[in-house]
Image 1 (cartoon, one colour):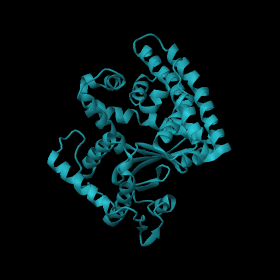
Image 2: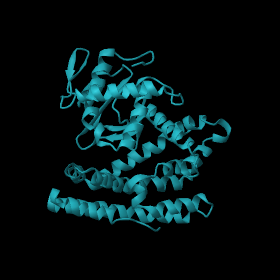
Image 3: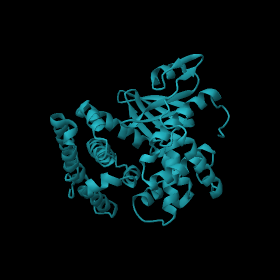
Image 4: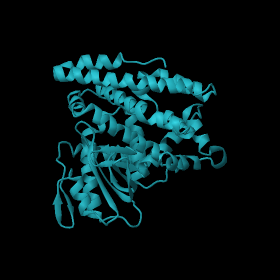
Length: 354
């Protein structure tokens, strides 16, 4: 694995990466084939230190993919290893202890779960720490070890982690996919807002820099929604083990958070670029559950005014709050036996109009 100068202790990076590999071995197969192949391509770029815009040799990628899958086969059911820093041994999930040991090194260690039972780890350069609405925000740079899934921003009990390298690579993957058809829509508008006509591909990096705060705002919204929903939400997700129901739960909670804080803030600030960026990622179950929001965005983008978009957001906030509370109540009453009811409740909660 080729990394730049100022890399951390190789043994530390290797130990973290070993746990990443174990986590990937357990859960890489949970993805759809399309998502899996896209993530593996991006992971290859990162591991081999390819620039996001560089062309990758297909034969090398295919050989690497086969070797990686063979390695994962040998890691199934293996336990995560302890992490050693300066001669002291830590549990791999002891994020606080490990980061205390790394204090002053310019490094940051991440460990947690992207979904119930799905562990993730990473080691990155720590560029800055700031306070946003009572939560610390860790702005991270180059990553020295990471799992296959590398969300650009995450919320934990300890604060918000903004993984700027992952954000940049994620946007480059979106850009590369967009160039195949150059379809009109939110991503094209976001590129144009960030200077695509003047600087071409440079607009991708400009977007990564400009929209980092939009990701932080979403995580702040998630924190607020988490307080409102309480510990019952974590228990609910732990019991709903089928992927479809889990995706529906995540979509409903994300819509609650974004309609309650993110979109109202962006509208209030007249953040045109941030709105295009947000809607360029409005996809999957969120878009299925709230088609009225997409229609309102298209009206706004077509110059028909902001009223319908503001109405859609204002209507969405109480709707998704009530839906989340409804499935929470069903789980509190019947536990895992309410799984079918919860899935049906979420699927029938479609909000089609503003």
